[in-house]
Length: 141
Image 1: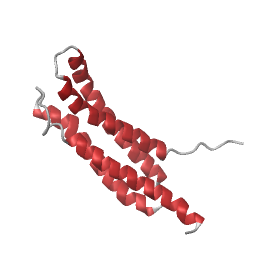
Image 2: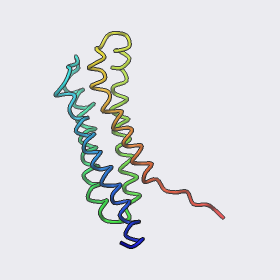
Image 3: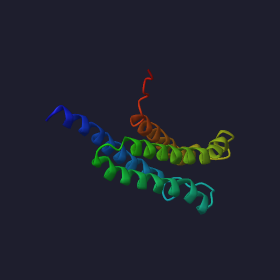
């Protein structure tokens, strides 16, 4: 294997790992409305809080699997990471009121954690993804 091959294989491997992690985390994000402890929340709210961002992460991760094998796609992969960050922020922000309710004893902690942690995982993955593909600053002369 030449030095050129190892340089091109590393970004491709990173894109496969991140996209695979995206699919796993998206599956986790999709589960709470249909499994685990129930909350007194309307189905449409659960759909907006879990299903929509979960589908966004599935779509981004699937596209990244295909695009990552094509070579120099760092700007595209960076944008994909930002998309995952937005989905994670969406999930985290929409669950903040639930966490506040749990601190007041108005919502059970088990259900709160079950519904809130996937959003945090999506957010962390998105940040890691975006950092992996950020552009290195060019030094001016």
